Length: 99
Image 1 (tube, helix red, strand yellow):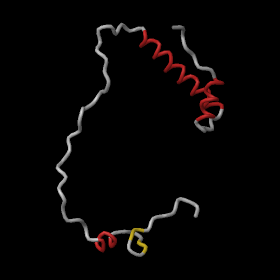
Image 2: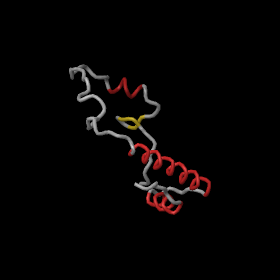
Image 3: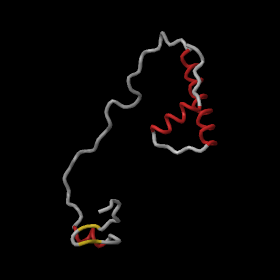
Image 4: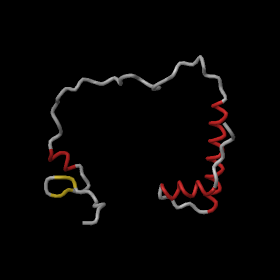
């Protein structure tokens, strides 16, 4: 496969799709860095992997879990006494949505 490069216009297009506002310096840096990544991937494609078994997943097949044993919880009054702010019978948190 031919050497893959990425153009500044392609970076602008992807940034627009991702709703990223990049200034000229950031566009230049991203164009260079993404080009480096594509060139490295191209180098990896040249490797002979005919005798390498495919790997579907790198990691544990199952995570070790602890027994799910019910136990006594913390009393609501005790939990609320530790909160910086409460409202009626719950924790008060700052709003993050316009109401």
